[in-house]
Length: 448
Image (cartoon, rainbow, N blue to C red):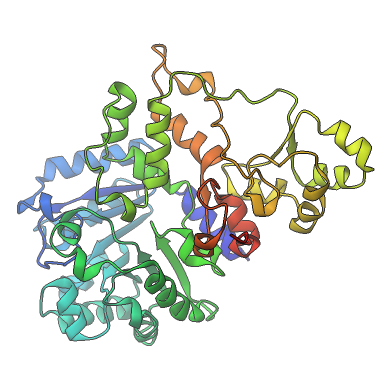
């Protein structure tokens, strides 16, 4: 029987293909990311078919039909059937659910091959739903959800986290669980579209509000059968529930998807045009800052010493058994914590936290790649050099290898408690996969 980690890691590896059927929606969500692109267009059949074929040619097995609102496309049912005919083993849609309030439409969609529906609900009362979605349609959407559940579809609920619904997030989860929904995706606000341009004062919550709303809701996390995902939600809000943090490989989708900003950055040095007030709210800020630093680099970045010791589990135990004089001689080239891009591999090589705490004070120099509270340096570390294969023939950084490099070497995170640490300004944090493995509780703010 697979455990939760196996299920999540397998889901990360699954090849998915997203196809937007419309640039139109019959809701007007206050936080809509895509409001600027909603021009009322329903994509022509030949365009959709070409996109479906493209996904299959790339080996995708899960088809996700999205929008706008995909179900208002007049050929939605045909596209579900087309996906099955082309060989997708799983067809899913992301929808506001309103069209599924019609029982006949629901039956036709399921008969055509629809297996799963993710409903964007965000609320559990008509009043809060209307405030967030801009329409008085809660009974209709709820009826759609019930029809899908009764029809045997896998149903999950998306909840965009805002200042308005975070205080009642626990009640929202419980409401839908009582209707038979046991899978939820908790989405961090993205600072684009209507949510940022028009409604930022209404929607954006401070760090403590996000932390407290999540902590109260996640008391339900151990409910048998409940499956929770997070989307773009920084791990600092998930202390005690680090297993819910989105796998870092999601960065490949975020960076390599439809965004051209980073390609331009590495090709021309031109910074992303979105820089400014959005940055503190953006999930991609750590990657963006790192990418801009490397794009502006003159080539004089650190080259890792060939004889530097990588501190993994066996090495930590071996070094811990040495007498201090032998230990000092053995680690003279320097020590760096082992990090890996894949979470399973990171767990396999990570030292035991107790071994690390015992060893760190005995070393003659800090352990590179760790925060100072775990034996790392109190000063900012130089950035590691990129491998040659991360650059093209002209010396420009290649985007996809850089994403992997960032996850493996530089994806660091902190606890909200780190705000009070004396070393916060220079500490880069703990590698994301070590934080997922050890928990953010491993971090202890140093007294100022």
